[in-house]
Length: 200
Image (tube, rainbow, N blue to C red; front, side, top):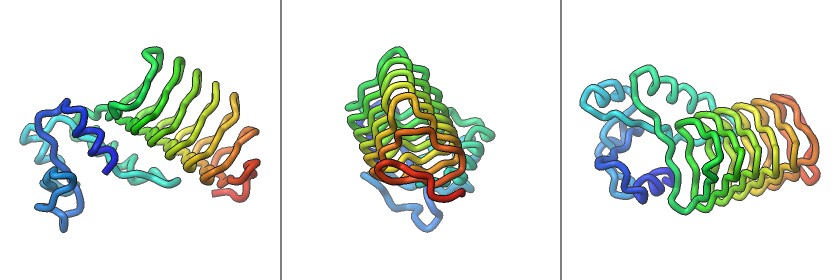
């Protein structure tokens, strides 16, 4: 819903449609028609739909998002970034493709964001941070300067990551956490201060 709302507000595309579960074909979201399901993607591409975007979110498991992204690439779709008009992004950034940047997000100078990442509502990504592919920086989170987030990471809502901290790939940081030290890959960690609690 948030992605679609941001997309409609940009007025960048002349025609927008939604692909969803087959049982929802014919319904609409925010006034936008659901015209097919995943099985129809190749046919829709042949009919002239050139752009596609994965709106499926993730809360620590990006496998389905990655599969959909790969499917779109294989078919030949261009996968743009969807950036809400209320966000502030420095011109001195390196942002890949297929990224969603939500309302009131701030992305500062020197940031690098890998493909398929989600930078959600009111998050702050400070200078020189790196966000890995398909990672999700959830609502209200703050990455202080030079933080490194690995691939397929979920940073829970309203978490704060101290400057120069590294969070390894495939890790979940629970909501409201304060991360003061590096966190290994493939763990679940949460708290204030954040502590690793179990392997994934």
